[in-house]
Length: 243
Image (cartoon, rainbow, N blue to C red; front, side):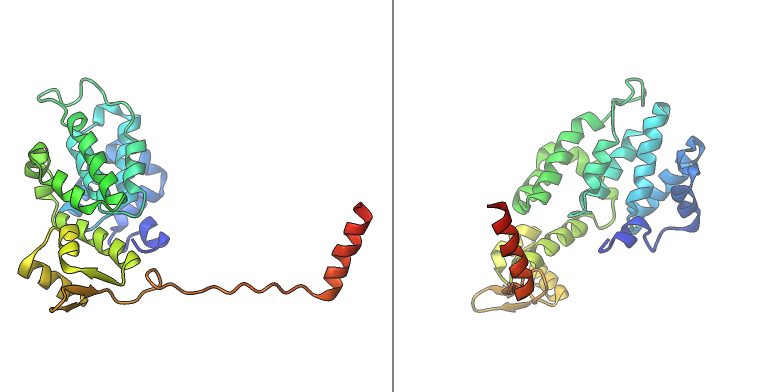
């Protein structure tokens, strides 16, 4: 997800899905089950394909009878970890009004979970990472954890990847305890995670050094004006004519 091309066409997308997403068949309601199966493959394999998931939501928009709230919730969960890309907001924009008769056997879980999912997204987007973990692990979101995110392989590590991207862009050094609250890790688990990132820790001070990268390095920019004398003469002459 580091480039536009990989967002539009992920390397892990099968040819069958590529044909569906890229052609007019993406609007064929008979293909929705194929796209839903592909979503659950993403959930099990830690892969991600935003355009394929958006195609599901578009089909639900055009064909309200196809609406499956569990699928929508899983799409939003996957989109949460795509930050800083705008995937979550793109998904929200396609939800629209949901049919009142959908999923008649049990209540629609989306209306109760959507505000919390939106708050989780806002916390990540605003880099309020401790607030994210507090809300995510709260009693209020027990249903989300027990019935949805538990099925998403590597969900918490995917959230930590969002944190790492933000930390890399903003810090050259960060305290171990502070980073621990961002990652919801402590002790040996935190040390192992930092070691995996190949970041160095000063054990005496607890300061973690973030390797230099284009985002966390401040470089002075020198702007030079290159105006030749003939150009300046034209400007002065034009000014004299307008006075």
